[in-house]
Length: 206
Ligand SMILES: [Mg+2]
Image 1: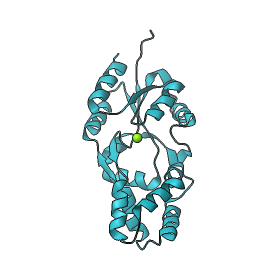
Image 2: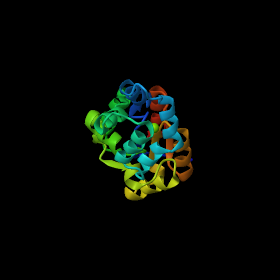
Image 3: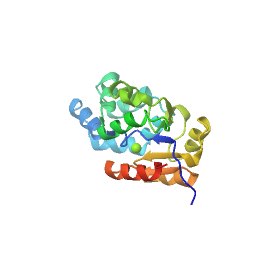
Image 4: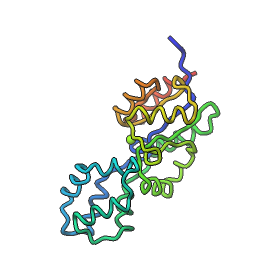
């Protein structure tokens, strides 16, 4: 068997480095909009695929707000809306510690590969500054591609001239891992931190 030597670590953002839950957004909006049916808001966003469009950069945050404001007759302003939409994250402390440790090990290079949108990224940079340790990033809304498209994995490999066999993706979504592994990267599905650490140690061992 060929010896693996992982040098490049690609991190997913949501539910890997930081956790998130859109319920905070829906709860927040319903606190301010008493007449709103949040179930309908939720299914509308899902049906119209608005989240993915934001992440792909084909829908701008202002238009996202305008569409919902019109459809649900919202009274809140754009800034409050965006704040509620963004304030859905909390840190994964163990992963933060892991990242802060790993960046100081010369052998490793770290990358961020995230399906995200400009308002979430802005919020994350402000409120979770440790993310900024990662200088090399591919963000979906900037490149117009989404995981698990094979093209986004090709994009990051090409952009940073990575050797696929030296590269591991850490991501909570099985489908992202599946496509990345099929493409030739190593993959670790992030579930519990303990499992992650033992997988990482196994893959990254010299
Ligand atoms: Mg994720």
